[in-house]
Image 1 (cartoon, each protein chain N blue to C red):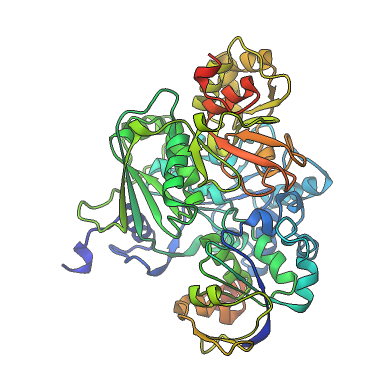
Image 2: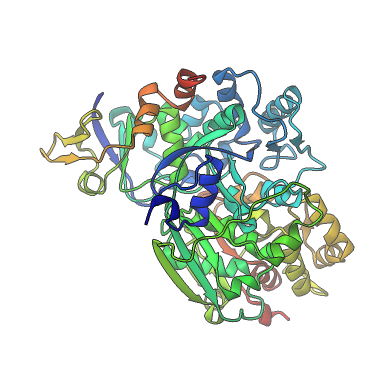
Length: 425
Length: 164
């Protein structure tokens, strides 16, 4: 078999396409053109400093850079205000089209797909590890550091090692309340936090065809928590439906060849997957939520680039409707974008949240990384729909985070301890 | 390049949140970041690093965030190299890009102990434990990555090669 006819994975095909070749081999290092470069208020200041050192004096394409002040914005302190200013002034100076100011800003990985800025077949890099989220759209997208982002902003190109691929085939019907979050937590528990290190994760099978786009974004989002470079889904009717009215840019659809040699294939029967939590201090430390019900909590967070979308808010609202959150805990709901916030308002979710005693916030990454809007102190414990539960992730190094999907988070908010919906409904 | 120093040993999955907690990410000043390096993992790190400037760790070093602040704070702390069983991919890229030497070697990482004095010869890929006499041979990095290292980081590499 010649190189040209050897079957390739989606990851290989997208990378090959972006370096104008028919074939790239796994393990090879190539320089490829990128379709979009993302930076945020944490990573932009270093990227801008490095960009200036390169000395091109201009960005490669003012329409292919996205700048989102979402981590410590709306500005949480004076230093954060300064970091946001550095990015804002750069965006003005270079006339960056996709700079999103507070007010139109949302959490980057919910916002960019919503704005139609990422399409199937795109090669996207972002100076944020959860840039892998856009794999849900059939894009090859991955997190990099600020220096990589700087080089890509200046040249439109970056070096990539072509990854090997691990395929995950999901079959069986999902249990009630189970969403993409439970599937991906279960998967990370199965393979470990480095189980897909440097690999492209391909999510497929009958069960993922039935998943909503929101659940797919959640799964791709957490590919990095298994060490993955990409977390890619095939494009189907749901993807196309999602993209309708969001873009008029044409796109190319890639899928893996039938005879591709995967590094490994996991067959996962979803009918056995219960609602999951990841106990401190690794996302792979997964357990069935019903088995850790005695764990008391101080705070619940519903939001983030992982689970701040309308499906997540809908599930939380269904559980919280007509109930009060436990008086001993703080429950904070953060719609991921302004559009999601407005939709939640129209559907009555926000009224449900406020009536049940939740705080509802404008979009921000804030509490997920212990920035603001829900930082934990020593000895405190949260159930959170976010993506990481490392030591000190949400604040004090002696605090703890249990990761979950929106159903467990909402039920736990009512119970004041880790709970599943059946206990509170 | 030859680096000779003593080892600070850490475990598996040393994540970016313990390398540099997000509460300090409201600055990009590497000197300020270095004041808090490894703060949530090892409160003695600042003392240790005065005498020992090579970190040896387990698998998946640097997992988590894309924050370049993590390798920057390690480098600014005076650390001369990090040896680990394996590295998380973004951390590995970032370290190469900013010129923090990183070496993946399961054999060396598992064998080396806290306080060992070691010598790393980057050109020959040899790690020598001068405390015990053990020698470890490291697989060379791909050519392209070696070029970035030789240029002293990715920005320098791009500047040198732009327009070629």
